[in-house]
Image (cartoon, rainbow, N blue to C red; front, top):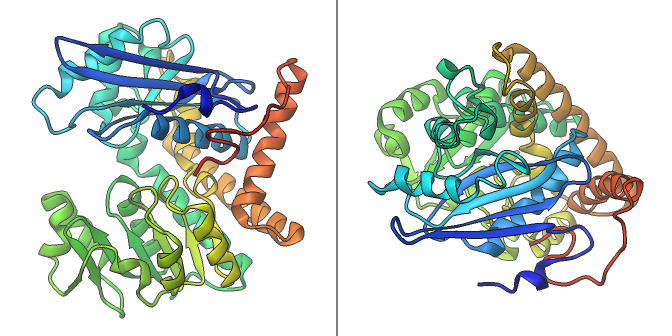
Length: 391
């Protein structure tokens, strides 16, 4: 386990809670990074490889994401070290939320992340007997199933359109490669197709489907509903090794799968002129510098994929309401926020002569610092562990 004290800097984390349960074998962690602008809110993931350091990095991203869209919640993240395909999945999840009953929902409200679904959000509510314990629950329970609705992917596509316009390019007819065809990737591809882009590559763990003339996104979506990740195989056509989608000829690249997928070498091979980060932390600082030096415009993750937190804000507001949030209002707000923030960050990076990540972090930190100063919390400390924008 990483040294938790070494992870702490002037921004946080404020609270790191590790829990376990001998009967189910559950092991997990909750990291509440910074609550100067509001209570902790962030997704909960389940993966055998979850670590404290990973969850802390993602909690910091949430701090910046909430501040970046100027909504008033704080950064937090939770992780369960377990296999989401295990038959003990529900028992492990219930043990985890029971162990955090002192934190949920007083300091933290659970959301959805890798390995968990809308039904899992319902289980969290059930285990704690509290509708306020989680958001992202199914529609039949009065929730806002934003993964099912594809809100985050929709926002990624809106950010891509805004970045293209900023560069003097039309997204209509532009070639787009999408890494990942999960909750974010498939929704991004659908919206990009609606906006007139030609989706030329889509990848899953089974490989990268590539057609320079454009894929039939509607057919791919139908195959995904039947075959999941195997849709790229069922589609037919040219299937490249996983990862090849990052370097196919394209105008826009959307990495919407895992973190740390674009290193310096991969950044040198990217052939797109715009990268829109649908996943959390897909690039590191070294890769970001390479992309910037090559003139590639990058829309940072916590700007591009913040549509999910906009939807989560609506869901947070409606947790105890008898009325469901209005999806049309959510999509309209996501579009407006993504387009405005994308332009703001790209303008700031150009004016400051920095990378877009540095410009976006500076904007978020300015807002968080202002809240900390007003509440008497600000006292800068030497950088250590996971400083500023953790990578």
